[in-house]
Length: 463
Image (cartoon, rainbow, N blue to C red; front, side, top):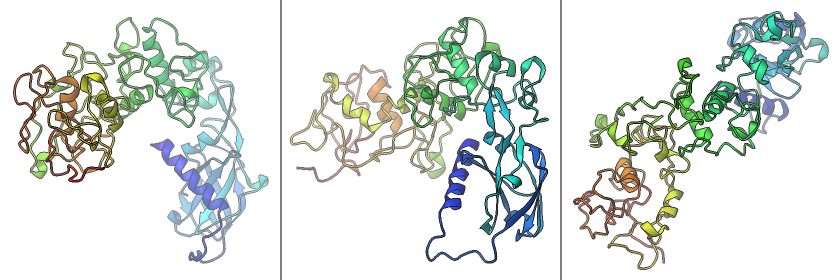
């Protein structure tokens, strides 16, 4: 969340600094602020700057100091004290991200300053632009064991699960939690790679493994490998990272060694069994607060679609909404496009809804494209924002819950033998008319399935 906030503010600041005032907009009153002196001219992150000048705001909260790197990236700070001629500002931790990095250490970096006090000041020239160093004495390399003093405040300076000494040995940066800037932390990529290599094999420094030195396998712009599923559990590398973040970034150091299949990470793309013995908690249904019945399916048993003793990552439920991770994954049936392939297969052959005479077993349950539906997400328990958990919700508003339509269509939830072509009598919706006689017409993204007379099934078919 911090990265998103900083990036957003950077874009806003950049826009404000280069875009003229919109025609007709009411300009701020008074002259623009001016910076005439900055003390000291060399300061560490966490240190204090005193900005002297004119036309600042006496009210502290109405002033903002903007630090600007040569790359255009910015960071923001509010003064701790203010008057119309002086601002006292503590250099925030966010400024550390603006510092140049070389040989795994942050380097002293000259940053330009701008004051926003109703209006923007001019960007400071070089003589008024201080050199900022990292936390510590700012002297660069020279700490014990070759670790940069500036990034050695504790054993894991950047809090990415990797010690400073380990990062130096494998080539990642102890100053940066995400060395390759791919939006996945170094520690998660490192331990996922170790899991994929059954932990005994040293961390690889080349593709195709999850790699903290390879920006293609993360979630950043231009990533080409983030959709790869390295451990074969149906969840992409980026999805498992998001699940790990969403569930609290759990780390169990006791599981970091040995040859078992579990991971020190709560979710890893190096093993299908990150938490093999940890059964998911039952969902805390929200519907009863609104007078809606809670789903009748038993939990956690409903999650266990493989029907074995092990809990697989795809069976677990990161966002605790009642739908197992794979059901909501990019390659799973929680995406409307998945059903197009499902009903095109020989085993479930059905024509798209609305085609002439396109009925099977008296139903119209094929791929539906008359209106859009919210795609499910394994790290968002309420994708449409209606306060109901996605499991108890009903994407196509046909009064059959997502749990029933997703699990029954894919996993034969009630274990009655699967699908048999049976003409059912509607509007009475009976999802389970008897063993071996399930309706074929289950589809969470088709309001005409399983009930062609549902309240949201279109009354008019396309020609």
